[in-house]
Length: 299
View 1 (tube, one colour):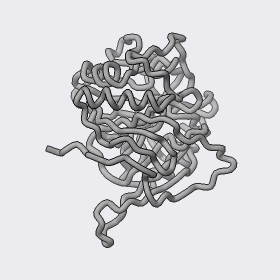
View 2: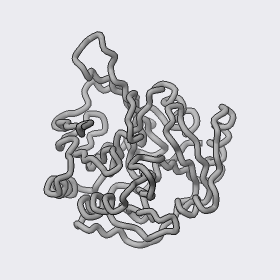
View 3: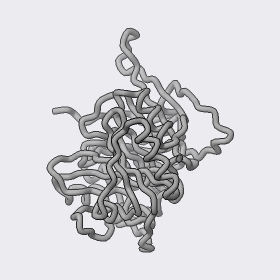
View 4: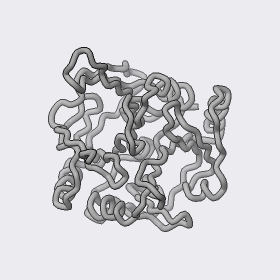
């Protein structure tokens, strides 16, 4: 039943050109082939897309797409969900064609985050060519990267991903956000899919209007990251966090604010884990160095 990876994410946008300017013209991703759904497909590897931006009435995160290795594992996940009285919707042929998958089901987790569960990977064999010479991204069986989602029902969400998607605990953090001992700490759980990436999903116990805290793409080299940071700054994009190195997955990265109202973490050198030897951790600090945060003003 374990999900093999985070395969893709889906975003809604009121202006597709803003995403093209951000992702292709600045970050250096590649625009994929057009499709009947009218969306912008953003490529980082040999897949037809890893980020699908669909035209809509809002700028927001829509869903995370979770890949299963075969039909049997896919159907086992759907059966597990139904046995727990979780509503599962089977996708139409139009939607499976849009996602370039064989079969797909939809559900929501206990905090209302939308999931697209699928099997059947597609390749179009067109080489990834960056508009800015990005050397490539760390994907393959590790999936597109990771996603961090809002989870007010934090423990219920953690159990959901473990029970139904077969994810495992990697790390957790409880952050003091106010400096007042009487205030509750912000909890974040990091869980891994059935691949060596440190975490494929993070769950943060706080509301986020856009529907997502951030998505992460892992470039191959530090130069890829540094040049991307320079381009983002030159373009006047909001840098949500300066360059830094996380304590738990050792990712060296910066964060930039996307047109979807959430952040993208653009990093490199993330940890890969042999799960047979891993003991889940509780990290007391989020970073080894850097990552000075500057959230977007609500006004």
